[in-house]
Structures are given as structure tokens and as C-alpha cells.
Image 1 (cartoon, each protein chain N blue to C red):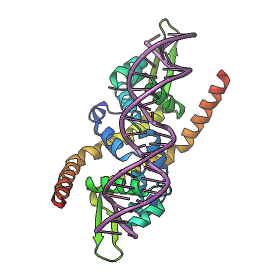
Image 2 (image 1 turned 60 degrees about the vertical axis):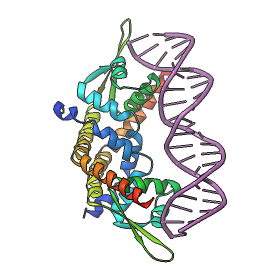
Image 3 (image 1 turned 180 degrees about the vertical axis):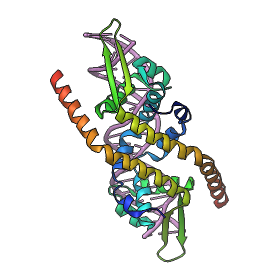
Length: 124
Length: 124
DNA sequence: CTGGATCCCCTAGGATACTG
DNA sequence: CAGTATCCTAGGGGATCCAG
């Protein structure tokens, strides 16, 4: 059993998950972590299915929280680059851990799903 | 800089976050982790604002993935108890880590938000 | 190229009423 | 008590057009 005291103070996770657990934020952080620096258009084409608007919204939120740094170059046509800040990288590390958990237990989860499906079928 | 190779294989996080990062799943896992075993009605009253329907849906998804165990007692009135499985507890451990990250960087994030707000104000 | 502004649809999820 | 079934609304997010 896990240390109970630690769980007491766990409430901020909810905020974190609510803030970064949406449809696109993950993709963005992971991509930026992987490539270091990316332009708006590079992100847009890398994140399959994202709309212009949502990429803007997502990046703005990350920038607002200080997880992503936005750099504008005064050129024609304009160039804007995004990169993780140290703070963003530290979150990325946690996400990698979470990802390792996912990898380690993916099979187990899928097996559970199949078994659950079988049980449901029996009932009917 | 973070180890790039690890990030390559990070995709499952997106699924995990998409699956467990919704409005109520966190609350449920954390509560079950904290109390060990809870009845449906206990969960409902503990998770402020959750509707009957969403608690059912949430618990069913967790049960389906093998993160939560559902036990029905043949009594009148009926009693149903929920508890984390070992798999569920292992996810909880990751969430606790994530929570510790949140705690550690909450101030930093809020400071970044305020600074961002000031900059926006200047523009206008 | 990078985004801001608008319109609009779709679905997550709340409220309510009903069963075992 | 522990759900299921229906109905219905708010807002997330897509499509499109415009601007610097």
C-alpha cells in the first residue's frame, strides 16, 4: 500500500491534469521536447489533425504558464519559434515517467479490456 | 537537455492522458487511493459536483481497464464497493509524482502567469 | 507565415425520472 | 442504494476569412 500522507497533498494534480491533460497540449510538449525548437508551421504539420486556432490557443496557454518560450524574428515572411523552457523540460521529464508507466502496463490494460468485454457479452 | 531517445517512445502518454486526464478520473483514483475502499455513494458525496451518471461512466472505464475492482454484495439495500487494483495503485504512484512536480513548481507557474498578464497589458 | 475574429456544429456531461 | 434511460444545454473546437 502506498504512503497515505503523500496522497493527502495530491490535489494540485487535478489542476495540472485539467490544464495540460487536454487534447493537444501533450502533443505539443512532447514534440517540442523531441525537436528542441519548432516553428508554428512545423508544429502544425507535425500534430496531425490540429487546427490553426487550437495550436495558437494551446501554445499561448503554455507560454502563459512559462513552459514554452516564444521567439519572434523580424523577417519577411515572419518567423516564430517555440521551445520548451527549463520549467517545460521539467514537466516533460514527468511525462516521460508517465509514459514509461504506460508502456510497462499497456498489455495488462488491454488484456483487462478484453476480459471485461467478454464478461459483458456473457451477461447478455 | 533530456535524453532524446526516451522521448521517441513517449506516444502512449497521449492515450493515457486522453483516457485518465478527464474531468473526474483523477478525483476518483486519488480518493480511492486515499481511502482504500469506498462505496458508490461515498464516492459521489466525496467528489464535489459529480453527477450520478458521470461517476458511473468514470468508474466503469476504470474498471474496464483493470485499474479499479468492483465488488457487489448481495444485500438489501445493495452495497457496491470500489477499490484500486495493484495496477491502479501503480498509476496512482505516478500521479503522486506528477503532483509533487506540481507542488514544486506552482509558484513558478503563477509568477509566469502574472508576468504574462503584465506584458499583455502593456501591448494594449 | 503567423495568427486574430467569427460562425457554427457536435458532443461531453448535467438534470431529472425511473428500475432492481 | 446503485445504477439506467432520456432529454437538453454549454462550450470545446473545427472551418473560414481577414490582417500584419
